[in-house]
Image 1 (cartoon, rainbow, N blue to C red):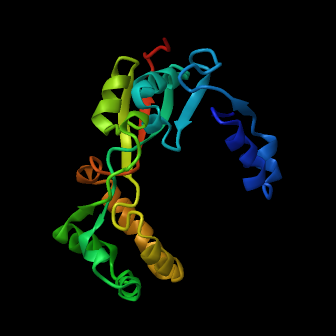
Image 2: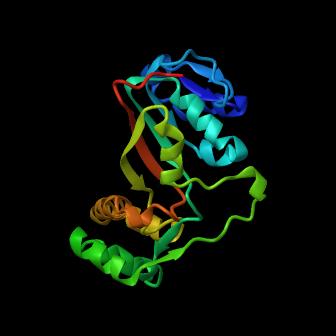
Image 3: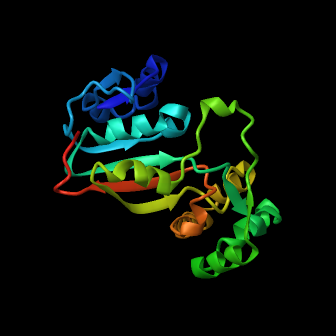
Length: 216
């Protein structure tokens, strides 16, 4: 089941996945509001909220998270994408030309992580959008919203803390399979460090509902 407020976005799904007929046959598309989902409580074993739904929920962010959480059955899981800040990137990598970054990512992942952490990170550009339409949400905030519903935060990963939105260096690395594989390894290691969660433009958090937890 795929729920989205935008009918236009739902219409994009068959086009984007036209090469995967089996997937499309299994998928039901439904237009609806995540703050008031048209399902009974506890109907799903797993719910996933992606695409910055929480951030763009603005003042309704807490209501959206709790409404979706109520759809999850006891012992079920809830995966949230949160935007804690404007993002960041490695100070070390951003001062190197793309070709040098590709060569660098043939080095061992452990060394790269230590080198990147040693020089630290620079914040991404602040959002220029209206503040009323977006609400940054950090992991502890979301955890507080869900605690009363029997959820605990589990695996947490910040997305792409090393390169952030650096399209040029990302494209260069993608052209080298070995370097690209190492980049993914490094990004995952860095993303699991709690220090990377508070400024990340995207953090994925897996919450698990206790077996005794009951939908509202």
